[in-house]
Amino acid sequence: MHRHREVIQKRKKREKDQRIQGILSAAKQVFFSKGYQRTTMDEVAFEAEVSKPTIYQYFRTKDELYSALMLPFLEEFGSHFERIGKKLDANRYTTGKTLVKDFFRAFLKSYEAAPDSLRVANTFFQHADLINALNQDTRDAISNKGRYDFELARGILETAIDKGLIKKINPYALSDIIWGLLLGITQVMDMKATKHADASKYLKTTLAEAEKLISDAIVLK
Image 1 (tube, rainbow, N blue to C red):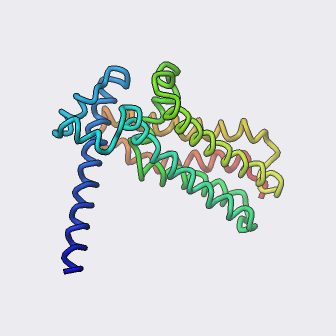
Image 2: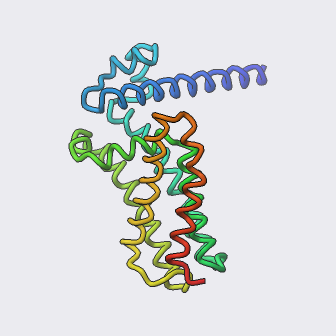
Image 3: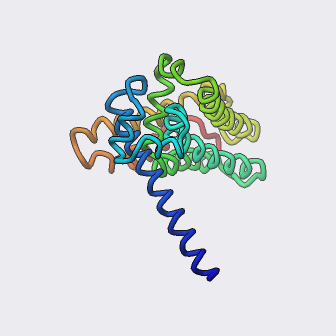
């Protein structure tokens, strides 16, 4: 009997997860095609082939639905950088080159885990009118998470400079340069993918070349 209940609970959880993913997938399509402000929950429900009350079982507002699309990349990215920071504090990096490699690897893994989340985040941070359209709680949650990730990256660079792993460069400028480079590369790959279906396969090789350029420019040892 107990085993039977476990099986039923697992099935219900699986169905719930599939329903949530279906809603998120539909929301992504509608947000990308119509933009945040013109998107309605009715349209998301229609695209997801569920009722609007079903969506409200999992997402109380359109803002909450939008943030659910964006936060996975920021959370994944932050968790990778937390591990890098701990590794650096424990003196487990003997060369700056390895640190730079982990920087790029963290971005790639985060992107591969939630590519659409990064695209939504890109759109959000580039449009002030979109930021202002969200309610204060959602705006704060997203902005605070993004700020936390940026501060982690800058802190890692500052520590690496102090440890003599990389050159003495303004860590604020350096983190922005690396971040801009990573975002720019993924955006270019996305642009190419609209014309050439296999263009995204070049992302890894392009990131590898960018990693080498950054490493050669900033690494001391």
